[in-house]
Picture 1: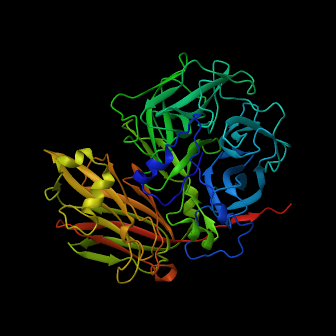
Picture 2 (picture 1 turned 90 degrees about the vertical axis):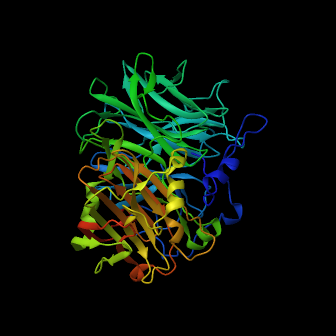
Length: 580
């Protein structure tokens, strides 16, 4: 993928992102040459995460090609070894036995050949039926950002660490033809096999139409473009980091990318360069026509379903055969400015890997932090049947509130006090409703939830909360919001509110919330994983031992904290070099 300045709101980004030149090329990445230091001498630890993946220093972005091979999880990611802003990108490589503790290796791919001399950008990994892994990646061949697709293979298949990768001389394997915008042609997907031919997708755009080009191959080396794209949508701009995978109609198990049949739906996810959000649809893949058809009723565009309604981009899934699950990785960038990143000595984190499966309704995906994360849980605090009247906030004490895992279920006696849903909001994004209502504006049923990374006197806090609205007779809309506007007294920060509406049955009069709090990130999952929102925040008071955690209610309806478990989270081994 290409990377943009990371401090601007979406509307300002729109004007900068879509920049076609006279020759049809575009260059949406920005290089901060004055910050391209040869080394980072001092690393500021104040806002560094404790249990989210990040290297000891410097810039990271996309999780390129996660995969499982011979008992080890491999994470490849975009990395600048020379500074804390985007540039000089290589494919860094770390391995793990449990997706939580990580050991670092030498970079797997770096610019070294004519076909990637100007950059090695994102891609995917495919494990072939004989067990051999292959990496597909985008190479940049000139200063005009002409993008081609290459492959790399392990030098030694007997090495489970896959320390060394070879880029054969028959690269590139995919060149954009005259019908393709060569500077908007990147991020090949994991391949799938159907009727003896491998398929991959490559993200692109035609004018303002997002496109997923389809290529086929018999031998994984010679690829031919299909007559028609797998899918495209007008008005969505450049599609980065496409992901295409099957999900089972029953159960939580994941599927190998090549699985098809009557018990399967397919998911197409794209990262929108235009908005810096991702969206996905579910539907039917016709392998004879090599076309994808989203389910009727789904919004096929940037107002559609999202994997995460917050700071989350360039995500990638992989099938984990050791546990029969599909695992999702996503990247969260910083919300300060490049000078602050240079001062910190680092930028970017990978969010906690998530298990992904189809909701029993068949209308959306569910996602939940991988079970291995629970190994890091330390001291536990519980609340049971805690009543919260309007204006109450109750502290959850005796845990490390700056590095915690909180799982809570709220209940309420009635839906009668739910606020009317303003018809004008129907045309707004959920975050606009969150902006208008917030966590402080007294409501009926809500706002209620958590005050995370809060200072003792609430000069700073990041609320994650529900508001319930009555939309029509016996119909309600549930809003989950993570609002960074009160998160910090610091200057020059992008502090947005993020929000989404949750499709949930309120018959039981309960709503659940899980939040992973880690110094500068609050990663939240509402109603069993029906919605996820990730926020980056930089408190100045509520740091380390001065951070507090509260449950709160600012609605007139009494809320009960039916069950709350909060754990201090231990710090895993993170990117310690493997000893030879």
